[in-house]
Length: 154
Image (cartoon, rainbow, N blue to C red):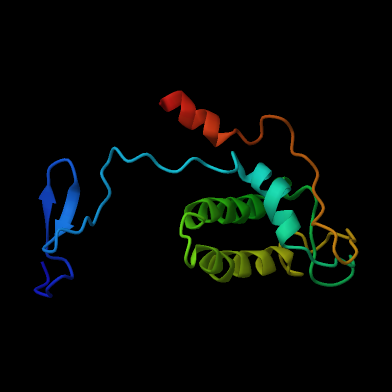
């Protein structure tokens, strides 16, 4: 306890979790199910959403750069996985979740991936205005569908 009223003064209530002095729940009940994933893995997230939402003209000569086989680059997989998981979490915030995702996540990771010194800096792939980022399907089995994994644990 810090001594600051309503900052950390809480107590454990059986079956509910932690509540403050006003009776507001601070932690969700452990039995509350997590929201169902929209996309089963990073590849589906990129293929169905991100490549269409984050369109850029690619000249193959200067930034931005992209590799349709992004899944061959460890840094790209890690950054795109971070984008997918943060999107899945923040999409449930109907107020500012989308804005926070763009500002704190997409606007941070995508320029780093597409920079000349990023993982795709040697790519000569070209696109025209309005085209989605190029995508080549990864080998089957490279990314598992997390929704199936979750269903198996239920």
